[in-house]
Image (cartoon, rainbow, N blue to C red; front, side, top):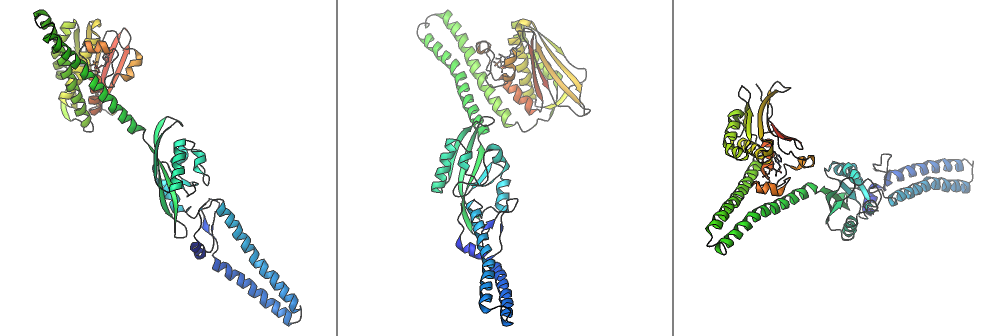
Length: 444
Ligand code: ADP
């Protein structure tokens, strides 16, 4: 209960009483009530004095009636005060003003205002959703069962000092929340200040996820770099030791070392490209690029790999130029990655088909779609949603053996997103996989 300052009570003539919508309003001030009682007593006094003067009643009887009238005028007033006092005991607080209520309601995060005993004065809709058991005028501790919250709340109430606690909320979905409790001086309806506690809850889940992703990313990147590095230093030791005078072994080991060094360089290139694309993710590229020559250029560049894997690359292009707004270097990386993956992982199919299709969009523009299809082993459905995650591979050994970094499709996704396009991945096991990049429609 919030004690009412005596000077405030004197100034306003009484405590607050709740109206039906629970917004308290001040009751009739003391001065007004005194005036009303005085008028009643004056009227009764005059009437009784007149009756006594005309001999209608005796002076003693007139005095007795006057005492009764005075009691009738004053006793309900005391009863009314007692009733109000009971309301106050039941928790109606002088800080339950519409302004304070509006401020709490307008807070974007879940917010609850407590009195100094920890009873809920106001809570906003977000708080009600977060903790449906919270009730106005009831102790918040009863509704918030989490031990960390209860301890923080008790400490904040006991010390009147701020408290901050983060905890895992298991309510509807699991999420990390932070509760901040700060003591606040809230203006009362009487013009004074009252000590309250403001509890606000903040969802830390996105932040935690980013932190986890960053930690995972650093761990993965270091691991990926450490593997070829360990191989390199192992071969250096061998070349300096047992294989020092073995020219055949030296040739073989130098070949492996070169492949490992190339893998490291590729990994660093991919990491840098990823961070560059992420940095410029908000800027949509605007150079006019014709997709047909770009795809031919990529296919020509991958011809040696195609020969090595004995795979034929079939290209199907529209007759008219397929011009989109894009970034040339980034688009080259997209198609290099997709066609190279098809050649590496789908080689057993013996054929890779690259098709550029123009599709009329509903708003009268033309949407270009580039599909890279292979006829290899395909990808099991459970892997499809995760393929564009950094360092995700269906078969880590296979990817490493192919010189893969696990970053190719992640880079593709980021570049496609920057172009405001979509990447679709479809696959049927044993029948190959199709990666389709859809660019946003180009207005005629
Ligand atoms: P990597 O550097 O390993 O190739 P990517 O991000 O390009 O990394 O690809 C991720 C994984 O997706 C690959 O390791 C491979 O397991 C799988 N993958 C990609 N393309 C194909 C494909 N055309 N057919 C089968 N699996 C594929």
